[in-house]
Image: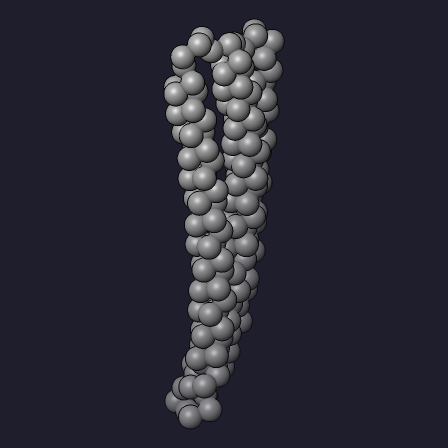
Length: 179
């Protein structure tokens, strides 16, 4: 059985993890707010410059050429914004994953220790129950590892999809201007 000291230490570790994750979440929110503020400021500045440029246009052809030249930078900026946003979210998610993995590892070790202790103190004739408990523990560990692999694959797929979309968005206006 767990001693009161072990229970207190476990609760203390859980609280430290909770506060650490809360701090990481706030860091992620701060980064997103900073990104959005810088994007809004840049958009406002650019809007002022574009308005001045539009007001100085002398004919319709010049206006159409100016309009056509606006789409490439917009697509590139949108792709860059999406990339930055993804990096922030990915970094914050990575911190949460690390903390979860550490907690899961600690819980697995504690559970294994508890099973070993129970096994040593088990009454005669309970070998089947002990074997079933150890089998359940092995199955849980296997399931956890499978979930970790699936999450890793999904993350890798999302990253490659984002890269492909970014490349497509950046290339599309360039291709349309060549026509």
